[in-house]
Length: 351
Image (cartoon, rainbow, N blue to C red; front, side, top):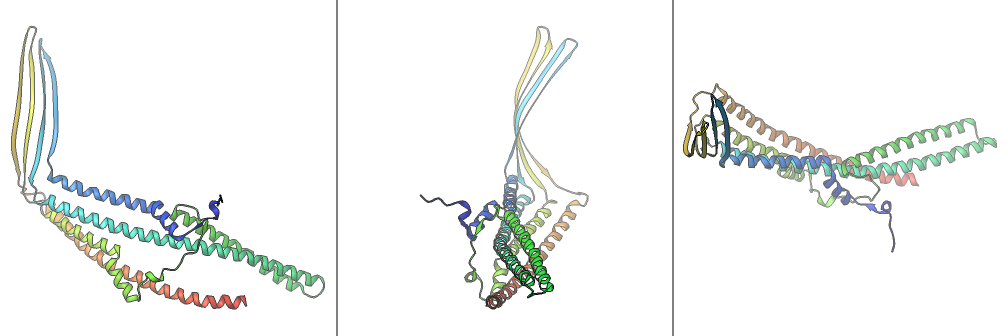
């Protein structure tokens, strides 16, 4: 059976992305935030459900040879029948917040995966640069030795030796900087992916997945980008938030029922009397707000301003996505041109 060491197994880009998706702490924190937001729907729905509470009390009083012992226990059920549609609109607002949180999670996922790809390729690039810098140092070291040998036999000058030594020293400095860059890229990779980079396999370009033109990319970004969708769901949440605030001045109606049992013992000596009984009650409560110190109207105005801000945030998100897509597309085109030019440069340098 052949045994392959862990260092010899090449890490692929897909494997690094999978590790980043599962291990990245920022992404896990965003997932936890979505779960927190999910519970807001259950909290909002509690307004439709009854509340049940139990109660018990007891006391003992002794005075002038007479003792009084009393105790009671019972259960109370309360149910809201009408609350100005606040529960209904609160549920819809909470659901919209969940949709916005999920789109925000998608946006975080895309950013983390993009950072993972960049970190992966940065490690490969910086490691190769560091290796080339080391080879350059060895080459210039040989040039220095050759210049020194020519000077020793009288075929060169001290200036030639000094120039070769200066080139070697500059190459050593560049090699040290390249080693530092490689270590820095490895640290960023460790932060994003969750593991130290080992033997990384070069990734393949994703040209087939790209839109055909900048206009297609802009249209696709404006239609599907999660940051835009998240801001649109935030608008929906604020619309229902305004309705919740507008329901505060409306009357509320509730019903309450309770059952209980109480007992009393009082007397002294051989004369002790016991009084025990059961109770049951049903009633309703109507609350009509008349004046609330201006709080309700101020809350409505505040909610409407939040709604206006959320609508502006949609435009901000659209502008940001458009700028990001345009920048990414132009950088990609510039990178393609640079790759073509650098290939010619490498060929010329090799020759």
